[in-house]
Image 1 (tube, rainbow, N blue to C red):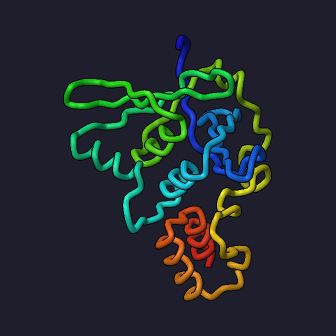
Image 2 (image 1 turned 90 degrees about the vertical axis):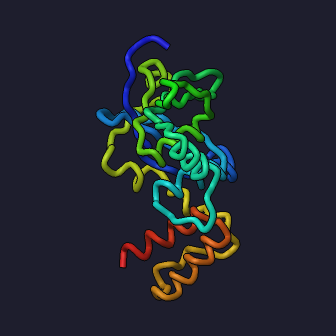
Length: 198
């Protein structure tokens, strides 16, 4: 891909209107107002939510294991590049530094974003992709509150989390432990957010 890279970041993780089992991760320019929604699956949404919310897992998820593996063998995730958009599919690669030199690894964009969030690595894309798939956010500061419903609101857990504000801290902690035990990290993130508000 020719042209200069533009740095982007994850700005929201939301329910997708395209289906009940789909989500959208929204990336946006770090120094601009353009945004791109990328449709991802439930498990990928959970993998990103766990990292963004710093939820501690009882067992490592696949992306946590991959990070541990890369750390063990002195492989650093230098950056993620979303380099192509074809027929509605975003293509990404991981640019890694290793003892053998710089390597580029093809990746699904959802996995690349999950890894970038764990390594705190920069994410880049190109002007052509932002122009073709992006939209201008006219109210950047309130995007998550005004334009998107948080992904945690559609947890797949059978127990409702709509009444969290009415629960005691003890009940919330018990529910949080149960969510983590059941590996429902989106629900766990919502409960943790409620505890933070207290």
